[in-house]
Image (cartoon, rainbow over the protein chains, first blue to last red):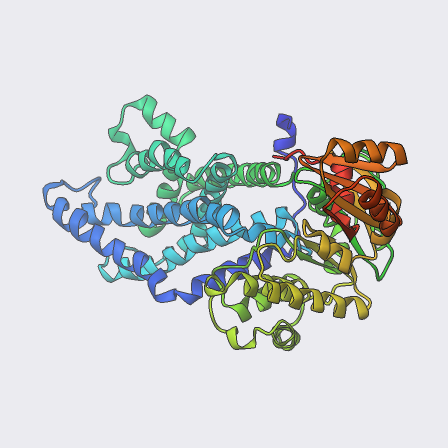
Length: 263
Length: 283
């Protein structure tokens, strides 16, 4: 496959929604279990880091440490939810359960299936944001004015990480190898995207690297601004970056999966 | 796949035969519109697979080689979720799902998860799932592999019932007795080519004759056979003699060549298969 073929716009139909529905139906079967992590995780992190470690941290730009990390927790959850959904979970459905094979015997195409998977990954990110926002608001760590805007943005950010996960799913030789992108890409992002300390604490070249190549940086930036009640023009840069890279990687991931599965 | 050409008539049961790696599954996947053609043309139900794949797939049911039931759902939910891919409205889907579970004798397993089903039950459920859209064309890749005789007979029975209702059936199978029983016409493939096509009886008649005599390999027997210019094949320490009149030759061999052991049986598709594709193990 030539490079240009990787970025050819795939033909996706509205039937993709049926794959989304399938995954939603499975999710709803264990809804209590599925709602627990986004409910519990911010509580644990806020207690340990925000209120525990936070006692020893000076305020950051006049903001209490707990307040500083609270939006980052949402951003990290957005990343984890869709990345893991479209990497490990999609791989299990594709390879072990042969769910995709069964679906492409119906009027759906493999492009529809992957698009449905990506939409569902993004939905999981959004669900996590919906659960986390009130929990964090309960501690008074979020400005409620623009906080609802975080929800659609969580969906967009979710799409981005869903596409990243799906690209790795498309090229991984086996499920164990998915540990590499987690270790080398997701975990560094978790730590170095302005999540637990401001990006400005890092050397300048690394800051530029983070802005150019670590998508979480932009997600953290937008969610943090919104939860501080700040709506400024500079956010447009982050949003356009996320939009552009999302479209690129969605197209790439569908084409890569097509290449892997259509033989 | 190497320049194959075939036509399947509406309402018939058509078999693809061949050793592993012969290209049967690839041919089936092309009919299912999931593997693209590198060249040539393939029409299914009068529609080109390259452009009208969604329409074709909406009129087709598929029983794949590997059971790919949705392990996240119960038996009944598997049918409902699958019906949704075909845009079948929910009430209609529920009605069909119940009818189909009855059809394949799985009503009492309605609410169990699919992994707890036995192999035969899973296969029946896959068949039921393939029928959820009331297909005109049913494709089965090794429909009875690994099943006990009871389950195989049940599947055969269901397939004959579907044929009576006018469903066209295309299948592959390594069980040649199954193919002989079910198929109106068949092709034998190897190395991506079609070697023969015809009805099971016709193919047997053309390539073997009506009967086979089996005798132990013995120099005197071979001499006798050469004298009679018989059509025979040596297989290990046995000799297979392909004949149209088994009685005449066997009497001759017993009398004239003083053979003690010889047995006659009707020729089967398996004999044709082995003759055409050889006895060497594949893969």
